[in-house]
Structures are given as structure tokens and as C-alpha cells.
Image (cartoon, rainbow, N blue to C red):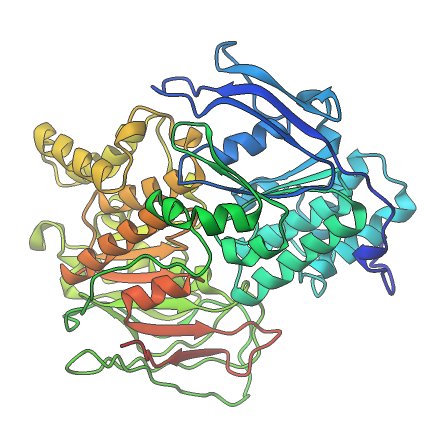
Length: 556
């Protein structure tokens, strides 16, 4: 394998690329088993080099349209598709080398086990000269903020946000005629959002590539786009024009339809969380890193939640030097009934690692992680009391006490039907408790979750055919189906339109008010404001001054 290129040229110095002409003629797509088509007789032309922002409510078909343009939407039954798509006059399925697709799920973009190889993969398959590939690899990594990673670094060791950057780097290295990006900044920290956006715009500007972006951070992209296309819930185009025309004149109409527009945040009723109750999970001297501790100084910060009658105190310590995704010596970190905590920090700082450890899904290498008596006896009393050691619990014990929503929703899906997915957990818990499932009660609970999370219309669909936003809501619903006492959410608002975002926030608020302890990993500042509670910020090894710190919540 080649080593890193010395003094790699900027991505803006790359060879010329001509944009793709994209033409759709009466394109329709109907997912098998769905009542209505996802795309309904779409006809449009996107000019070479045009920069297009594609908007619409959750489930409107934005991702499906990008897949169709990229030529990777397969009509397996011969009845799902009609109409045509051409790229520079060639059918889309025969022009795949011209379109580079970045999918919503960062995992789907990772192909190989080492960072350098993964970024080089696309360029190698396009028969780029070997002498150019490794220069492209390094400059693409630099462009998306991953230039500090060794090319031999394992892709499995990257965080979700880092994998998202890695996928984009692989696309930039290909120099395609068109970039089709599905939520390219969804899992990124605020600094990374700007960094990645600027890298995309620079590549499109220099190479002349056509650019299509699906994104809910509308204000980040709209000033730089030539055109905004909005898909409606009926699978047709509801708006098409310049950003000023669509986001200005049609602003109120888009807001009413749940579409995000710049400088808009859904109005929510005032929320005052109850005073936290009994402790449910406690971590003491918790080591979730294999880094040898040093004698460097430790810092202690405290977080106080102003609205609580008796402020919560989180005493946290961290060694200053740790590797990405590694933490050490967390002292007296507790989750209480009726408490919300936001876990913040840049990509790669270890947020998911900490959350997975608290949930018993990663085993700590040092210290003590324990469930309180209240959580151990949360299901069925003393007869089925769980052990204090959360990491020793079996899956049924975990699912009935701690609900976990993974950053990648697909990790949670085990059936081929949405409705069945919501019943897996409750049936498993009933088996553990040696009782017969009350089918009427389970059906009613399933109907309630489907309605509350706007999934009734897809209850018979395969979970893997849902949109990104629908998959996220389903993953939340599966975690709630067993009524856990602790809920841990990794990027809960990913892929949500303004309406489903507000409904999800209200749902989490209700859970907190009912006594559920909720910890959210998020980059969504509006979400953290809406939920309140304590904020814990993890700092990345490349920019940190304090490894781990709690910060005071100042939101009133």
C-alpha cells in the first residue's frame, strides 16, 4: 500500500470534470406492499453543474429519488418502476460511474477495513492512474477533516460521524460528474458541518460536477445552491425554483407541510422537568479505555440544573491524554428517574462508547457500573431481580430495563414487517417472565406507538425500505415498546422533518415527566434546548483542553 503523499495538492487543483445532465421522464416508483407510490410521475431536468437542494417531509421519497438517479434502484418484481432516468443521455443503471451516491447510513459507505484503502476504493474501480490515487486519497481526507488519521487506521474504530466523513472522502476522490449526497452532515458536530459543506462546494465548483443534496440543515446549504426542489407527500414535486422563490415566497406553505426552512424552529409549549427521583445507574471510576493512565493533572467540573429544587451534581474526572473513542476514570456519573442528560462533543470524542458502556452493551475494563435496586427490580419485583452488574444481564433483562436507540437504525431491525418489529421486545419480556402475552393489550400498545410516531401508514412495510427519518422513528418506537426505565438515544432527531422533530421532542418530554431517565447523544442544539437538563461535553483528543467535562445548563 502506498504511503501518505507529501504536501498533497488541494482538492481544488484536481483535473477537470464535466457535470452530468440528469433527465427524468414520468418516473414512478412503488415499494412492494405500499398502498401509494413513493415517486409519482416525476419529470424534470437538472443541468450540468447545477447545484440542487432537495427538500420534503420525512418519507416523501428524497432518498429513493437519489438512489434512482444513481442507478441503484432495482425493480425486482418488474412492477415497481415506470418512466425513465438518463445521465448524459445514458440510462442511469448504465451510467453508474458518472454518479457518486452518499447514502444516509454511514455504515453503508464503508467497504474496506483500512481508511486509506476505503477512500481509494472508488477511484481504483474507475481505473484512475495509480500515481494519482494516493494523492487524491490524502487531499480528500484533508478536505473532510480526517487528514490526521493514519491511512492504516481501522475503519471499524471510527465513530459514526467519522464514517460519514470517510464516505464523503471516498466520493470526492472519485471526481464524479455528479454528487448525490443524502444528509451529508446529519451526524457531524457543528464545526464539521461547515468543514464538510465547504469541501463539497469547493469540489463541485472546481470540477463542474452536478450537485444534489438532501439535507434538513437548509440554512447551511441554501445560500450556495442554484435551485430548490421540494417533494410532496404524494410523490410529486410541490415546488421548484431558486432558493429565494421557494424558501421565500413559499415559506409559510413549507412550514405548514413540515419542511425545514432557514431560521425556523418549531414552537413547543413550555416544559419544566420534574425533580429527578431515585438513582437508576451509577458509574464509579469507570474505565472504558485500554489506555494506560498517566499522572497528568485531572480536572473536576460540576453541572447544576437550575430548574430542579435540589441541583444535580455530576462529578467527572478524565485523564487529559486519551485516544479517540476512549475515556478513563469517570467518577460518580449517575442517571436518575425523570432526568434528561445531553451528551455533547465532536465526532470521535467517545460519546457512543460511553453510552454503550452505560447501557451494558460494552463491558468496562475498570471501575464499577451498577444498577440501583430501583432498576434491578423494575420488572416483576424481587422474583426476577437482575444483578447489579449491568454488563452481566441477558438480552431480555436489558430490553425490559434499558432501551437503546443506535446511531444506525438498521442495527435494531430483526423482522420483515414494521408492526412485528414493535412486538419483538414485549414478547421476549413475556417469555422471560413466564407469562402469556395479552394479544389485545399488545395490539393496542403497537397501534399507539405507530400513531404517535407517524408510522401507521407503513406498518406492513419492510423496515429496511423505510426512509431514513422513518427508520429513526421506528428504532425509537422499538426501544419504547417494552417501557424501559432508562432510554439512551444516539442522534434521536436524525432525518426528521420539522413536524416529526417536534413530535419526537414532545414524546421524549413526556417520558421524562413520567420518570424515565433519558440520555441523548446529539449535535442538535435546538433539541438540547427543548429538553433541558444537564449537558456533558466530551472533547476530542485533537482539540481538547479537558478530556471530559460537565457544563452548566443555562437554558431557562
